[in-house]
Length: 551
Image 1 (cartoon, one colour):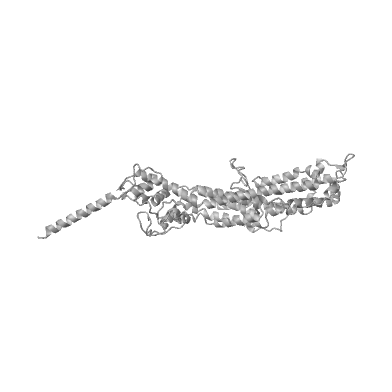
Image 2 (cartoon, one colour):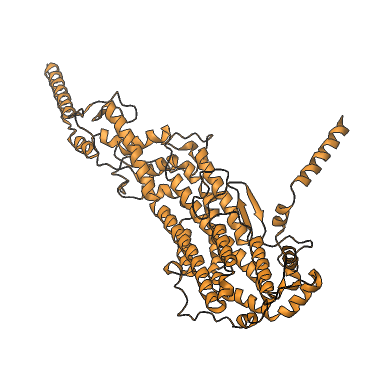
């Protein structure tokens, strides 16, 4: 008796509830989405006013949505731009630091050279007068070659300095013995006695060691700053894979399509997406850290024994001391040269050495502190090095920590784990965060990454850092590495430019017949210096012999 009315009531109630639910679904407005979409610079011409069925969506959840296919594509493109901007902003400090410090160091070293040349010129004009001005080109050549080396020229510092002292000996010998006439062959004979006679005392040897090591360190350090700057700038321009693009769209803009444009992704969700998208960048980190360590080692040398400022500021005094030593020993030097090279022909009437000794006997008076030129670039090397060392230390592990830096931004993620976008709705994100690096992305739940295909561009940057690290380590040990430029477009591009991945080690000590035991090198270095063709030849011969025996 009661069955029919009850069934009818239940059916009526179900119909009413279903109509109410349907009405709620249809009444969900896309007004928030339209406003946010407009704020991104897009037209709202084809944006739905209310949610529509989402079967057409390829990335976002296919429930009811505020996005058309065209809107999803546009938001996908926007997600790429947003990601590129995030990486650029997060790496801005390190890139601008390397750029500004490279510029500062470069200005400092060049101005230091200019000041040193000016100081020497002013003092020598005042002290030696015309004797200097008539022979000033050799000093100009000295500084010109030092600058050419520093700015990346293929200059052998030792040969250049040896040539300078030989030329100075020839000029001084003629001035101190101006009553004789000297042929070119005779002057060449004089220069052969430079090492044996040591006319300038110990100054050339000491100055050569100081100048070569200081300039090697300075040039390598500035080149290192330039390489670090270039690598950082290149790596900051990310290559976005299709898998990364899809994950970025889902993370940043699927909440828009769901009518929740203000909903930010969960922090751990962001971490997985960023670690997938920046997997190759993270693999740069080990080589980057080694590069930074090598830069810090050379920075320590610049503060200590290879301080170019301490070498260049008193170079005028040291050269003058050498000149005075030569003048004091002129009788003995001339006698030995005459014995070895023969007695020169007397000059014509009127040629005399009278007055020359008086000029050289004017003992060199260095500048007092208040007279010296202002410090290069308005600072000192110590202050520059202390500053850059702190910045370099802060940049270690930068590339592997880039996802953390991006996802820590409040504008990117929501710290509330329950009120954030978890890739499909509002709520907690449960998957674990994967480790950084390409090989660890095999199990990344958010980004499809092909771990068998490393980014070749990133691998090139790794090689660039490796080459520079090798150069810095050699500079730390006082050795030079010349990098021959293989492309015209890179040559002369700035201080310290012009090198490839094929280094040639050039030692700071001249070739010796006997082993130099004063500066023992580690066994690894010694092995590296040996001719690699001999072990290879021995291996080939051994292998051939074995093959013949087995026949």
